Structures are given as C-alpha cells and as structure tokens.
Amino acid sequence: MPRAPVLLAVLSGALTTLAYAPFNLWFFAILGPLGLFLIWQWRGGAGFRTGFGYGFGLLGSGVSWLYVSIAQFGDLGWLFPLLLTLAFILFMALYYGAFGWWAGRFSRLPESLRFMLVYPALWVAVEWLRGWFLTGFPWLQLGYSQIDSPLAGYAPILGVLGTSWAVMLSVGLLWALLGQSRKRLLNVGLLSLVWLGGGLLGLIHWSQPVAEPLRVALIQGNIPQAEKWLPEQLAPSLVRYAKLSRDALDEDLVVWPETAVSAFQHQVEEAFITPLETTVRNRGSHLVFGVVQMDDKRERYYNALVALGNDQRDRYYKGHLVPFTEYLPWAPLFRPLVDLFTLPMSDFSAREAAKPLMQVGPHRVGMSICYEDAFGNEMIQALPEATYLINVSNDAWFGDSLAPRQHLQIARMRALETGRYLLRATNTGISAIVAPDGRLQAVAPLLREAVLKGEIQPMQGMTPYARFGNLPLLMLLAAAVGIALLRGSR
View 1 (spheres, rainbow, N blue to C red):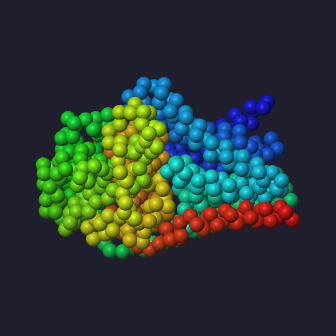
View 2: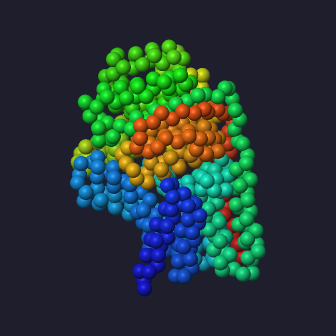
View 3: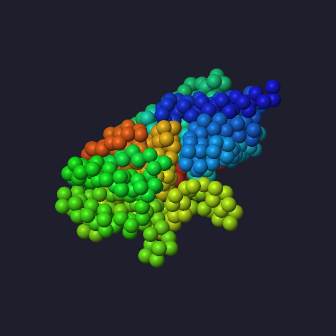
C-alpha cells in the first residue's frame, strides 16, 4: 500500500484544521502533527511526499475560503477559480514537503533527538520562512490555534512562532511517551513542565495602564462586497455609517472599517468629510475611518486610515499589500492574468513610514489594515509608543466561511503578543474588542449591521517579544538542532 502513508498524512493535515477557529479544538494541533510523526516512524523515516500530503490536507481544508473570493468577485465562473485555489494550496503544501525532505536529512540521528529536538525546530523554521518568503502567508501557523490553551502564555515572550514551537515540542514528547518505556517518567515531567510553564507565564501582566480608560464604538456597516464599489452605492453607504455613528459620537473614539468611504477622499471631501469632521469636533469625540487617498500629483493611491478630531488630521497608509489584489508583482509576467479579474482599486502603493503609528487624540496608536495584522513582527514595530492597537478589515470577500473566524483568531494573537488592547472594526464582521491577554471583550455578529461599544485601557510597557522579535526563538531553534547533532555524533 505505497499510497497509504500519503493519504494518512493528508488526513492528519485536515484534522489539524479543527484546532483553529471556528472549531477551536486546540488539541488537534497536537494530534495532527503527531499523526505525521507516527507515519514517519511506521515508514522508517521522514520524506517529501508525506510532508507534502500533510500540507495539502491542512491548507486544502483550512484555506479553501480563497475560492469564495475568486469565484464570487473575480467574475471568472467556477472552474478557473477552482484551479487557482488548487494551485495556491499545492504551492503552500510545498513548504511542508520541504519540511519532510529536510527532516529526512537527519535520519541517522537517534529517534529521540529527531522527534523531540530536530523536527520541532525544523517545523517552526518552515513556518517562519512561510511567514515572509514572497511577501509571506503566515495563515494557519500552529501557534494561533493555542490562543485559548495554556500554551498561549509563551506568545508574549516568543510570539506565535514560539507558541508553535511549544506545540511541536509537546508533539515530540507525546511521541516519546508512546514508544519509550524507560524514560516515560522523565518525558511526563518534561511535557508537564511545558504546559505548566505556559500556564504560569499566562498569569504575568507584561504591560501596565497609562492615562484614563477610553469609551469606544466600532461601526460594522455590513455593506455587501458586490455592492460596495458601485457608484450608486456610495451615497447610501455614507448615510448608513453616519446614521450608525450618530449616537456613538458620545464615546471617546469611533472606528469605521477598511475603505468604509468607498471612494477617493478628494471626491467626497467637501460634501462629506469636512462636515463630518466638524460634527466630530463639536461632539468632543474622535473618528478613524478607512478611505482611498491619492497623492498630490494623483499618480499614486493608498489604502488609508484617517483620524478626525485632532487639532490636525493624521493618516496611515497600508504598508504590507496583498499580491495580485492590491498590487501586481512582476507586472510584465502576470499582467495578462490579473487583467482577467474585475477587482476595484488593485494597484495600491505602500507606505514608506518606518513605524505603523497614527495620532488619535492624545494617544499614539498602532495601526494595521486587514491582512497586515497577520504579521506579528511588523505589528510590534508600533511599540513602545502605541498605547493600543487598531485593525480595520473587510472580510466581506470571503462571505460566511472560515476566513473571518480565523482572521479574528489571528488578531487576538497580536493583542497577546503586544500586551495591548486591540480594536477590530470590519465591514461585515467579525468586529471585536480584544483585551491584552487575547480574550474577546466584546464581539459583533458576522454578516449583520452592528455598533459595538465598550471600554479599553491604554497601556504602556514592552513584552519580551515586542522588544526582541523572533531573534531569541531563531537562536533557540538553532541551539536545539546543534545539541541534537552534537549528541548524535557522540
């Protein structure tokens, strides 16, 4: 049965998806990779095919929502979007195939060293590579699944990748418990230490309150994506957001989603933005809204956020753009393909500012637009100045799929890594107020119009992860592989 190991690896990858939102069965993040390890033990070693099969199962089940956006809004029928989605999944599965191949290079080491030191280190190294290579796709890193488990305590120290490492270390120790009777007591102790350590670290408060609490309101307009950019929909959309914000302007801060103003700012400046700014100031509030801004020469445009209510307006431009939808890499090669799509505003420019910060009232705030919050190493650049975080998104592209739930789970990790409150305002959901420990303080329902109100506390201080980023973890991974090689040579 030569195909059986690959099929079982695909199943192990698919089961791992159950660890993420909306299922939140975090223990499957351990059982899925453990299944892969057991296949390797059964087949006598790691390999590309089984690693690739695992990745296909994980990505095929976990990011199938990509088809929704291409099929519904690309105006390409059903077959071509299916092929594009499959091609993307196959490409992403190559990372896990590379993990399997790489792991096989260490086949001469004793099993205990491979499964407990080398394989966890290589897994996280591949996740790290996947998070930045070709602009990065860090979705479904194992650490995200642990936001509600004791292992989340490692996130403020080592980030989401460090949490992934704690998961994979647990997998290796559990594998050892299933097979090594002589050292079973030692392995039980080490596994207990990993989980107890995460739980105890979760009790530490890495940041401290500064200034007075803020009363906030997040506006979820629920404008269907198919209508959002229609010229005749602009006025009704603006009226909807204005009405929803009428009572909310009694709060200290109101946040609208990404491109809530679905036009170039100069097109609605006189008729809408300027009167809105006057109202915001008269009510003693502040408003942050998403809009498209064009430079003075009208040669470049930006996915932007604008803050009203200050003495002077401040703005933030999105820096980490999504390939093929917000900008076109290798334009001469891919232009004929992208011209098939009917995507509005698909040639944005990126911000040049070093830090993702914006002034909102008396506070410096860490900003991110949509996909940017998937990159923890970029979000921490806003610290220590930022006293809280704002993320605005438009997940209407993905409908009622796994994507909005998974995206909220990612945002929760950013709050935990930084020790800051995070305000997440979205067009169709899921809008939320996230506490510094990653807990959901308030949540708006998906695909419904909503005004989400709550209170947040501006914070100061630096978590270890915000201070040092991924460097300590990468050194730890290198040390684990080095120790394994050294012990193996002896």
